[in-house]
Length: 170
Image 1 (tube, helix red, strand yellow):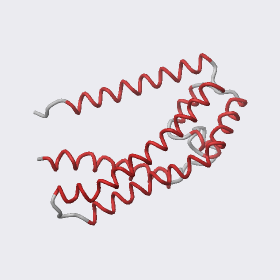
Image 2 (image 1 turned 120 degrees about the vertical axis):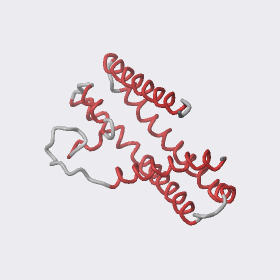
Image 3 (image 1 turned 90 degrees about the vertical axis):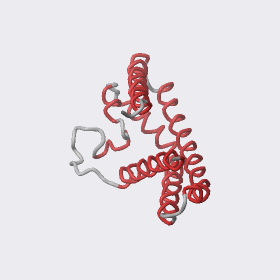
Image 4 (image 1 turned 180 degrees about the vertical axis):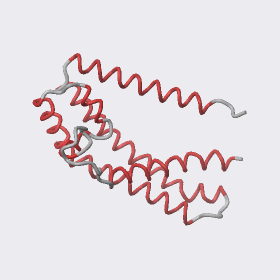
């Protein structure tokens, strides 16, 4: 019974790691002149590119954001690499211990889970620093409001998901 409570978070970490690794390693198949910011020379907008587009950024703001992202690139890339390597090691250790008792697996992967958490927190700090710099130095008050609304909606969706998963299964 306890194994189930231990296995679910590990599988979630593995799944997220696989998706993150896949999204970091794949290149979009669209043409570079595509209108969506995720493709071509606009790839630096990242996963939530549509929100940046919705903010109606000026060319000067886009240049400022690009400069902020570029200035943090020397920190972002190694941090993301550390996350991916920690998740990769966790996956390897879990796969290497298939058939073991849950307690044995737990003790074997405890350090891997700690390494993933540490790497994720380092990466989150860099991403938060980047977003704060953009919000404070680049965005207008109106754009900050649009971004705050987006963040509130995202938080509400996350809470809805938590609530659904917290419901007892029938």
